[in-house]
Amino acid sequence: MGGDIDMREIEGEFVFKMADPLYRQKALVRVCEAMAWAASPDDVYQQVVGVVADIAECDSAVLFLLAVEGDTFVQRASSTFGEAGARTFTVRQVPVAVGRIRKIMEGGVPVIMDYDRPHPEDWIPRELADSGTKLSVNVPVVACGEVLGLCAISYLQPVVWNDVFTDFLVDVGRIVGMVVQRIDTTKKATALLLLDERKRISAEIHDTTSQVASALSLAAASVRVGHEKEADFGDYRSEIIEIERLARDLVGMLRDEMVSLRAPLEQMDGLVEGVRRSLESFERNWGIPTVLHTKVERDRLVVSMEASLQIMRILSECLSNVLKHSSASRVVVELTMDHKSLSLIVEDDGVGFDLGTVPTDRFGIRIMRERAALAGGTLSIISGSGGTSVCFDIVKR
Image (cartoon, rainbow, N blue to C red; front, side, top):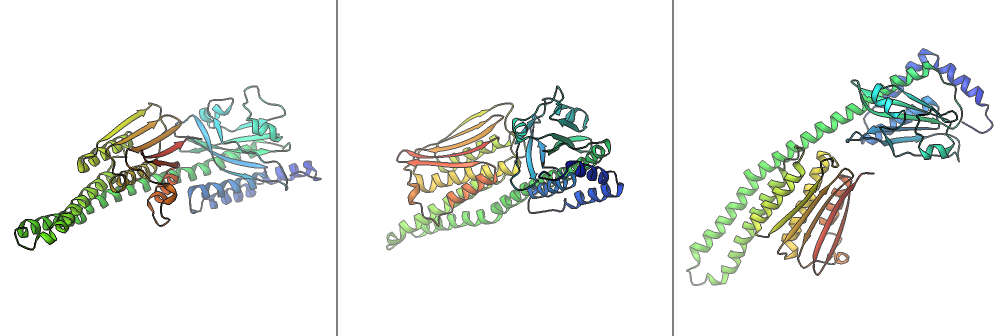
C-alpha cells in the first residue's frame, strides 16, 4: 500500500472482497492449508502469519503467544508487507495487563486501535508509534475457550473497518489457536517419548554394557589373583592392574550415565533434583568432593523438559571432562533460577587448559555449545592454571 495509489480505491475493493462470504471461506481455507507441518513449529507459525498478512492486506502481521509465566505475549513470527523501502517495525513482547490488551485475556474479543484517535486506555508501543502506523487490530488466538496469544495486524494507512471483517478475524484467531494447540500437544508428546526413550536406554546400559564392563573387571581381577605367584607374572602385573582399573572406571562412568538419563525432569523441581543426584553419584563413584549451591526463586523461569535434558547432558559432559582431564580435587556447581534467567556454573580446581590449543576434532566443547543452543541458551568457558569454569545461561528476552 502507498505510493501514487488512491487509498480509497483499495479500501473499497478490500471491503467489497471481505463482504463476499465465498471469499472469506476461501481465505479461511488458505489459513488452514498454512497449517501443513514444516521443519519446525516456528516455520509453521511463519507460514500462518504470512497467509494472514496476505489476506488482511496489511503492512505487518505479528503472532504473539502467551509466555509460560502468563504475564506477557512473546513474539513468535512476523511478516512485513508493502512497497520497497517501507518502514518496518517489530515489537518483541506485549504486556498482558496494560491498556485494552487485558480485554483480550478477559473476553477473547479483538481490540482495534486507531492511532489517530486513540482510546484513553490504549497502550501504544513506541516502535509502532514511531513507524507511522494508523491502525492495529489485535486478534485473540483461542483454543477450547482459552486465550493462547494474539495476532496483531497493522496498517500504515487509514483502512475502512466493519464488523464483518472483525468477525472474520475472530474465526482466523480460532484456526491459529488450533495450530498453536496442535504444536503444543505435539511438543509435550515428543518430550514424554524422549523421556521414555532415555529411561529405556538407561535400562539397556544396566542390562548389557554395564554387565559386560563389570564382567571385564572381575575377569582382570581373577587373572591377577590367579597368576600373580607365577615367576614371570611380574612382567604383566602392571598391565593387568591397569585393565582392572579401566574396567572399574568404565562401570562408574556407565552408572553416571544411567543417573543422568533417568533424572526426574518430569517434576517441577526435577532439574534441581537431577543436578543434585548427578553430583552425588559422581562423588560416590569417583571420590571427588562436590558442592552444590542453589538459588531458586518461587517465581522462576520455567524451561521445557527438552531444555532441562540438554542442561543435564551439559553437566554430564562437564563432570566427564573433570574426571578425564582436570586432575581436580573438588567440583563446585551453582544453579540459579529466577523469573528472567537460569544459570548453571560448573567449576573445578584442576590443571585447566588452553582453549586455543584444543584440537578441532575434539567434539566435547562443540557438542556442549550445540546442546546449549538447543536449550535456548549460551555456553562460555574460562580455563587456566587455577581450574576451569563452564557457564550455561538462559536469559528471557
